[in-house]
Amino acid sequence: MPAPTLPDPNVVLTGRFAPEQARRYAHLPFTLPDGVGQLHVRYDYSDRVGSDPALRDGNTLDIGLFARGIAPGSPGFRGWSGSNKAAFTIARDWATPPLPPRPPRPRPLARRARPLQGLGARLDYRVALWFDPGLPPEEPTLVRRGSPARPDLPPPAEPGWLRGDPHCHTLHSDGDSWPAEALHAAAEAGLDFLGITDHNSATFHHPDPARAGDLPVLLPGIEVTTYGGHWNCWGLERWFEFRDPTPAAAERAMREAAAAGGLVSINHPKPLGPPWEYGDARGYAAIEVWNGPWLALNSLALAFWEERLRRGERPVAVGGSDTHRLRGADPRALYTPRLGQPTVWVQTGGARTPAAILAALRAGRSFITASPAGPQLYLDRRAPPAGARGRRRRRR
Ligand SMILES: [Zn+2]
Image (cartoon, rainbow, N blue to C red; front, side, top):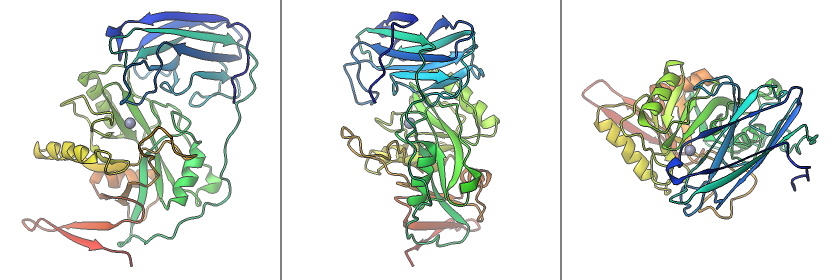
C-alpha cells in the first residue's frame, strides 16, 4: 500500500551518528502537544541496507518508542520494530503493530535510534512526526478463518507428549502475519503449541477462547534482541532491557527474567545467528541448538551447548524454527524457515497449558526432531551407573 501523501510534518528531527556510536541507542526526546489523538512517524537515513547480519557496507537504524520514563523495565516502553517499519502510527483506537492503540499522552516522548553496521561510515537520519494527520486504520490483513486442516501425523510413540515450535515472529516485529494466522498455520503444521517471540515486543497475545480447542496452545514469549546476541524468555508478559550490549547487562536482564519465573534460552549461538557475544554471562536455562534448517550452521550451536555441558552447566537443548514469513518466501533469503522445522517435543503428561509446557522444557523432558513427523527418540534414565538407554520409535 503506497504511503498516503501528507502535509508538512509538525516536527522534524535530524542528526548524525558517528562510527563510534555503532550498536548504541540514542534517545531523541520530543514533546507531544496536549490533546493530540494520533501520532504518525516516518524515518529515513543514509546508506540504508537491510538488517541481515550478513550485509555490510551500509547502515541499519532501529527505532522504538517510549512515552515517559526510559529506564530499564519502564512501563513507558511502547514498542520496537527494529528497522522493519519505516512508518508507524499510534491512534486512540488503532496502531501499527507492535504499538498498542491508545491515545498518545500529552507528555514528552523519547525515541531511540542507532546505526548497526556503520563500519566506518557515518549515518545521517531524519525523523518526521505528524500530530493528528487523520490517517485511516491500516488495512487489516487477517486471513485463514475457519478450522485449520490438521495433517495426518504419527501420534506420539509414548502418551503424554506434545509437539510444538517455541520460536517465531509476527507483524508485531518483523514477521509478515498476524499472531492468529501464525497459530492457524501452526495447527496446519500439526503442532500442539506455538511460542510467539517477537523482537523486543511488549505486546502479548491472548488467544480467542472460542477457538481454544481448535488452535495450538500459545506460549507467551519475547525475543530479547540486543546487538550482542538474542535470547528468548517464555512465560512472562513484559519486556527486558536490550539497549546495553555488554555481558554484565545481558546477565542482569537474563537473571531478572529467570527470577521472575521466565524460562530463558540463548538463541542461535552460531555465525550469522546472529552469534552470542556475551562470553560467560550466565542466567539462562536453555540453549537453542537447532534454529531453522539443520544445515544452517546448527552444528556450531550444538557445539556451543556441548561446551557448556563440559563446563558442568546443564542447560536444556531446545530448537525453534524462527519462522518470519507465512505469505511466501523472501526471494533474497538462502532458505525460508517453516513452522515446526524443527519441532520440540515435551512431556506434559497430556496437560495442554503454557505452565505444563514450560515445566517440561525446564526439566528437560523434551527432545527435538526435524519436523512434526519425527523421528521420535526417547531416552530413559536408569539407575546409575547404567546411564541412558535409547529406544528409537518409528512411524507406526
Ligand atoms: Zn533471533
